[in-house]
Amino acid sequence: MKKDIDRRLVYLLNVGQRRLNRWIEARLADKGMVSSAQAGALFYLARQDGASIGELAQALDLAASAMTGLADRMVRIGLLERRRDAKDGRAVRLHLTDAGRAALQAANAELAPLNARLTDGFSAAEIDVVARWLRSLQGKFEPPRES
Amino acid sequence: MKKDIDRRLVYLLNVGQRRLNRWIEARLADKGMVSSAQAGALFYLARQDGASIGELAQALDLAASAMTGLADRMVRIGLLERRRDAKDGRAVRLHLTDAGRAALQAANAELAPLNARLTDGFSAAEIDVVARWLRSLQGKFEPPRES
DNA sequence: GCAATTTATTTTGCATGCGAAATAAATACA
DNA sequence: TGTATTTATTTCGCATGCAAAATAAATTGC
Image (cartoon, rainbow over all chains, first blue to last red):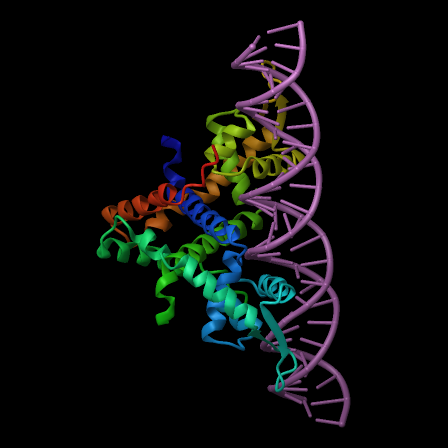
């Protein structure tokens, strides 16, 4: 296990994230619900209905092309509606459908206990450290600028 | 931002992991190197050459089918060799090729400063908390048993 | 010894995410 | 005004990862 030292955090982060995601997916899929990525989009649209692809991509830290695909699938299964922006013909605005709102409620309910589980066994101070570390990654591993 | 409270850690973990991964990929890809997932397999095989698909899947916390695919691609580009186990005809043992060993060295060198960057700005005690938290996810979000 | 079961891996089909190149609409500027 | 550039999104091809079903080689139990 000694050789792992240099990649310990990378490894733990990778595995942790994947484990959590798998767990969420399994939990939601059991009940025929929306996936984890889709839930993220629903959560955001709940607050900002009509957000554009670009806005969502930025909020979820996704490449625009990934957001297009995610939106595609969500439109296909009836959770969202695409509407061309009237003022700016390039932009696409996404709107929750009734089914989307229902899915959001369901996912919200199913995932409500999640945060408690994530913080279980750690003090508030410790969770602060964890959150600060996770946030620090965003600055440290900024996508390379291309301007 | 208030509504985000319930998913803050999920979100930070997701974004943090993806940022880090993107950064690593970009760094390695620039120099025509191996991907992040492939580097993980190389690292493991460096210590356990001849490990089976199953052993690697377990070590990297991947589904067996994902490991098959990863090995496929690595064999295809000449980093690994597949050899049927002589004693157990079901098992496949993976071996580093010379190209694989070279790629490992290169990736090792390129990623050496990574751990320092990951811990930068945090005390050893804080990093311990982070590591403990990340490890705790593995127990809390264990894949559902099916026995 | 051999049918039933277990174990290791593969195949298939899909979602997610990325980067690079292509489109299309708006804006700048000459 | 009309061309050049910028901006928003999409398309394409690919890697990664998962779950479920299929294969194939051991192993168990009788």
